[in-house]
Length: 576
Image (cartoon, rainbow, N blue to C red; front, side):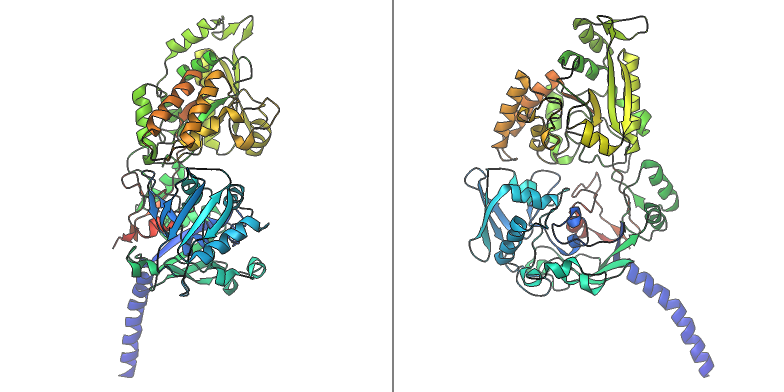
């Protein structure tokens, strides 16, 4: 009798335990991390926006990628009444850290004091805030005022929202005060739990060399105040992998819910093994456009390419569709303007296309020939244009990584050679291109992404070609801005328009008109030529969770490391 009972219990156990494990896994969101795990202090390295801190820490503001709208989070309002010199920010009421302590302006004051005075805070977001913020003063427990060194109507958009370059997170004073040295030397394990304390709906539970586990905080302030319901995943697991290939295999086996960024061939391999995997778009092309469209940048003061007619001729010869087809196998989009094809910029791109200032996806060789002939060039016996006995030639510098850039530059070079401009590519390391070729102007042309910046507002990309940053060849361009060295009378007029844009809020009704006026000057002188979008593939698995950001529902950027965790986690629902 006892034998039968025991055997029955063993059978029941063998049937139930796998189901229990499966049920637990179905309630977990599993995120990969590929590198040797290292937890930086807040603002001490580039990792503060994408690491474990972003799971427990919440932003002041989300920025809706569909438009320029603020989505208040820790902050309830952000206002200025003096043209952006001072910003008055109100925190929500009844916000608490996960240990029950209130989050108020004393924490804001503490955070900014560290950022403005600490020599160990060297992350880009900390450096940028130090350069711009003059002082921060608490009005009361809920409101504080940020005074800038110089008026900036885009300060909240650029530095207080979730962003690619690093997100501003508040530091809990009662946890961090006097303990920075201790936290900076903490070993993997329990010593890392305290510096991960935040206000978000997840609390750090355990950290090992293999993974970090966060459990849902059932007392999260956001659910209590009605800001948002508790997210569905009961725990979040960050699993550490030694190599990209290991993370790819885990996604093939549906062991993780988000994949690392991959190329199209690898994505296809994953889909063969795991039919639950999706990308940004269901239809081709599947990649997310990204923030940094590729373009051909000219050195506008290097003869003969200091002649706008020659640059316009190149623009007419460029066949964007051929680049997409031959270099990307169709898995990309042509770039009609310098802007990424993101929802928040669509109204500007559409307006520029309607105004006739956009780059066509097909070549117009007859117009290109006309530009060169008018400039005094004629084709020789070898079908290459020449003038005064010299062939018209062009060297395009391009980085070796990502490899797709060199492939696209190669297609571009062949297109231009076929059109009568003897073109070659010079493939160099990224370090050489970005340190020793582009900044000092030692190039005629480069395949790059020097207009990168705008996401919901055109200013960030437009200001990169302001003539105030034009320098001579041999002098390093400041911050990679206006590496084209564009400083003609048209460029000066362009700069005045961009200065006017700087005084306007991103939502100002004149932004569309001003952007059109600025781009008219770009199209006339072609200091750069838009080519293709960035094309980034970040796979998601719908095996356990659905509601991922896609082209049909672009509520967030698909790269979770860019401060997108809280947008995603509150949008996911169980697939079962």
